[in-house]
Length: 463
Length: 69
Image (cartoon, rainbow over all chains, first blue to last red; front, side, top):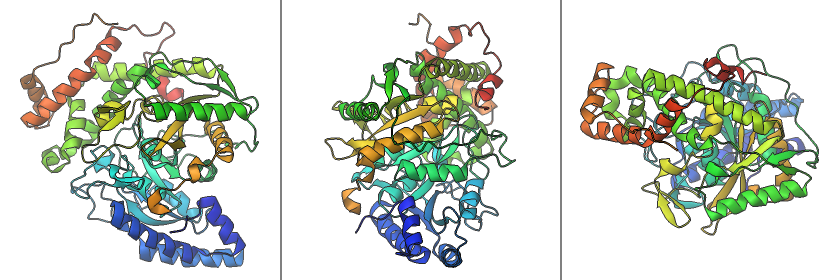
């Protein structure tokens, strides 16, 4: 298979007349079918709906009324509603009735001309294990003996397999950034509230965000511009400052902090090397490294999980009589939230403020933090264990160590591929910005990607 | 670091609490949730014992305010 274009490349091809939305949608559906056959990444194909939209896009390109994402196919994690299509949440307990309206994020993309072509695999309710009972594990395009990651598992696999140029995921503890890292993608967890969650099945109101998984920072930039802004329905999504992308090709004046401590104490050599490589390139492009540590970062994971699971247990109490039909991993994870004392939950929310203040200290002198996205390359199936420094660790002890900080505080984080480990799988670093600092993270990532080719490297199975 | 006593309720106590709150959990789940609570207990106990910053973080609304432009 030839490498498929990314979002920007596809729009350029439409403008040049070298391909058309209908051809691209057909190609995406063909690639998706092949990817699904190999990886189990798709819950539902939206062929008829997508082809109808593609024909309308063809007319818009022909008559000069093409919109910003006109004719670009994309995938949708199956906890996000698409009108007329069931949303299964990866569960036996949902998904028989079609959604009456699309989620705000889907509606915004469609109004910009993009075309949903698939509902993508998710861990059950975006919190279960790698083996959701209804649909099974999604394999990693880089190594089918490994998991694509989660919870936006099918979305990551489909984009990495070059079946679709981008997909939508959700991120409560890293669920956009982790599968992005393990599949060699560029994935954004936005500032909490920057992208409305209306029409997304909730898991944790404090920590949950929606974001894109894509092939490049330039694509994420383009998508974020469409997705952001209040919708009047998500109470955590309010007025935003203007989004001003930085189009400079150098990073003069950019200050980056590279904290250690909890971010790096459990971290494979190849991941560390990727972080150092990213920092070296940013410095070579003009950035300056400044001191900056987050002293309480080590507690962000256990306290963040306490918030997530307490809120999840609250949301799932209505279905408590049906928990025996859930993925046992879902039940084991969220049940710990049942017994969280109210005073501990509220103390955790106070800790959120303390962490934010620690970030304020760092961001007084730095524009970005550069940390590992996760400690290892992709988890191995069937157990989902990860290997750090030659030693095996359980998935949940390792995976969200650097990502939960962003969920608990609300700060944005961008996962950026930094190369391949000796095992042939991608490694990733994360650029963390102050609230509403996505443009700064995207600027740094775009410059890094202009200087390197890691983000263009396709899995052997897709090239 | 701590000096805090790590003390997690027994499986029976946790199961009873869960049942009172509307959740029926089997023994395996109770064991798993107790292990998870125990695993987080050191961090949680540290937090319980830590005073809030003098400039005030008592109202969690500060956490939402931080995100507003």
